[in-house]
Length: 284
Image 1 (tube, one colour):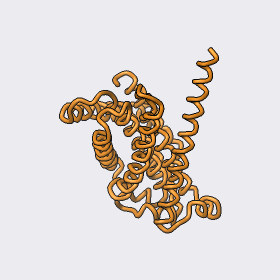
Image 2 (image 1 turned 90 degrees about the horizontal axis):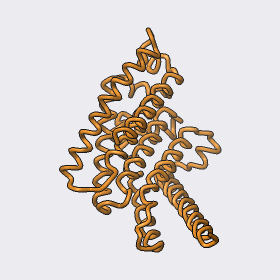
Image 3 (image 1 turned 60 degrees about the vertical axis):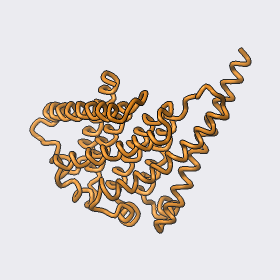
Image 4 (image 1 turned 120 degrees about the vertical axis):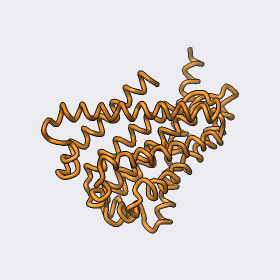
């Protein structure tokens, strides 16, 4: 009993240390990236009281920790081998999260220079969308790295698939909210929250879709495509029903776009995330 307790405490302490190491690595890389882009995070967050910069960092750290779950599975070889795997894949996670930020800037929100919006204008609406992209990417990487099925190449492949699907989901969202880009530019945080919830829900669904043993790319892509299509269509009808029941006579689009109603945006995001959790539990 004593030996089991000692082993549990030692493994718990090691896990705690690895988590702190990952957070420090992500925070350091964020600071270097901020300096490279011409600003100091500490100055923005503490001196200039810029909440958008803090939201951006929170997304980076949150996405890193979420993806970290994917490599916390003992290989059965030994702790040293597990530590090497965790170190290698943790560095990969941080790097890919930085790539996802570029994707967000250029393809999900192509109308903006995200850095100018977040740092220069303290635009919380844009920062919240960045936050969601980090978390969604972390979720996809969690699913892709779980058990390290297929190694680096497969993990990178799923990262690319995840980014493509997130871009596609954001474009579909624009079909139903065609003025969302202009509203984000006007710092309509309600729009940011609504889109963020939708993207995080997409990340949850995709995390479940890519988890499990890898077979072949053709079979996996077909399976993921069908899964995500069913999720998207079902979510669409869930929102139709929920909006009809909840906002009788008051279109949700108007509440979010015109009235900048935070409460409605949170409800919209909450429905997306909650339904997706149930969907992945029953169909995952």
